[in-house]
Structures are given as C-alpha cells and as structure tokens.
Image 1 (cartoon, helix red, strand yellow):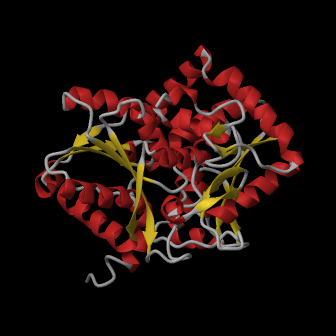
Image 2 (cartoon, one colour):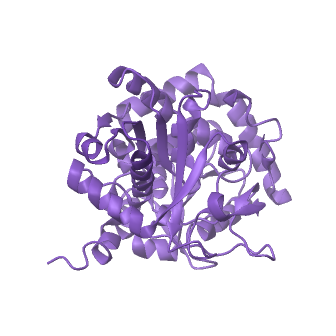
Length: 398
C-alpha cells in the first residue's frame, strides 16, 4: 500500500471520508484546507512545531522494553510511551500543532471537544502556551467520570462546558463544538482531537500524530535490531492508532492491530466497536463506519473508557480495514481492566483504560504468536481514571 497517496483531493480514503457539513461551515473548512496546504509542511512551521515537541512536549518519548510482561506472555514486548509526554497522553502532539496553525490563520480563540479529557487538557495547555482563550466542550457523563481532567483544564484557564444533550459523551461534545464553530467560523479555530470529522481534519490529525510511529520505527531498529512483528494500538476515533500505524503501512512484514472498546458485549448499545460491528454511514462530517440501527439512527455506545466511547471511527481506519491492511478486534471492559492491572503490577506503569484495551489485544496476540516482537502504543497514563478504577478494580480494596 502506498500510504502517501491518501487522502485524494476530495478527502477520500477509498470510499470513506469526504466532507458532509452545513453550508455555513464550507468556507471555514476551505480556509483550514488552504492553511494546511500552505503551512503544515513548510520548513518554518515544521521547525516551530518540532521545537515545541522537543522543548515543551518532551519528545522523543521513550521506547520501553517490558521485561516482565515479555516473560509472562512468552513474547518480546516494547511500549511506545506517549504517557510520558506533557499532559500525559498523545493528544498533545495534535493540540500544539493545531494551535500553532490557528495562530497563523489569525484565530482569536480555540474551541475543542473532549471525551476522556486528555484532548481537553492538551488543548487548554496549548492555548495557554500560545496565549489564546480556550473553551472545551465535554459530555456531562464524562465530566463526572473524568473529574481530575476537568480540574486540570480549569487550572490552565480553559472554560469547560458540560454538554447534556444526546448521549452526553464524546459524540454530543463534538456536535456542540461544531455548533459553536458555525456561530463564529472566522474568529474561532476548532481544534478537533481525533482523526475524525470532515476533510481535512482526519489528514491533519494523522500528520501531526505520525511522529509517534516515526519515532517508534527508528527506536525499534535501534533497540531490537528489527521492526516489530506487530504494532498494536487502541482505537476510538483513532488518532493514536493512526499516528502509530501510518509510518509502518508500507512495511509488509509489520502486522497492524487496532483494538476497539468491546464494552459489555456484541449487542448494539453494549460496545463502542464501530469497525467490528458498524455499518457505513455519515457521522459528524465524514462517511465512515458507525454504530447505527436498521433505520440509520446513530446509537448510544458503552465503554468503561470515556475516550473510546464514540459511535464512529476515523475514515482512514475504515479504509484500512476494508483494504485488509489493518486488523481490528474488540476487547471487553473486563479484558481491558484485567490488562491494566497486569501492566501496573508487572511493569510499574499505570496505563489509561483506553490504552489498556491495546494491552488486552496484545496479550491475545502473544498467546497465538509465541516469541513475536510486539510494539504497543502506550497512548496515555491512567491517573485520570482513578475515579473509575476506585469503583471497579479497587472497589473491594481496604
């Protein structure tokens, strides 16, 4: 697969992607596309971006050999440590890049949506860094279950707006952010947090997050003397996964494995596994795979992880699955929480619940492929999840 050719001029990844938006947003997206074309790969923007990644975000992030998990699983396991990046997750790579772009486009304020809170925190931090006010829309359900991140956003000067409409999670937050953007498409920059939405957002987010896979590719060759047999990442909207996968797409010997939120099971409404159980449709500006009923109504989802609790997925992931280049599976809530506990006890690393889905998938892969070189995208740290963990894993602890 020649990864460089996607998306096409219409913003399509095969049959997926595109731009399905109200007329009021067309001009804003056209301005964004022009800004991406002009600035994103220019030498001066890239120099500024990579300076911030190095001196503020803390890149390159480490590649850690997980010795105890390796012995336990009978494989060789490396962790790409996005949990060590500033603000605790991969989201900061995208947030600082988009906020730098917003400044160049003359934006007066930043808006963002967030599910698990990590993109909200990253957006608040990037906006503070560059001197712009920031408003973050967050589903009311997620405000409650991700309280530590709400506090962090407020401390960095952001206004957090709880969204009570719809399912009151990530999908509702994106809807509300889009409404805000429609009201002021020139003075406001919408910093979209995942590789979803109308073109050019899936492309822009992928390009900013691909630093993850580029670093990991070099680090694996340095530490292991070879590329991994498989790279594994959790998938909600899909930004950390596409960031890890994209630099490996043309390496035929590297399998790519995305792990979705299997929730309570396979029933509609019991999971957030759009690639595993979804069907084609339009959601929030993009033609992709979504969780919908027989009448085309988008259904609410379930996951113990706020960041994976989304009814759709980025269009490039839908294309990568349809082309056969990437395999996508689901891990249940119970499997993810078990893998989180195992990682914490074996490696002294507390991954985010989202990330724990990737560990669950990697453990399953290791059982079927003894001795394999496994690269796991450790997309974020689990400090933010302590309220959830207190109610689940730790509920019986003294």
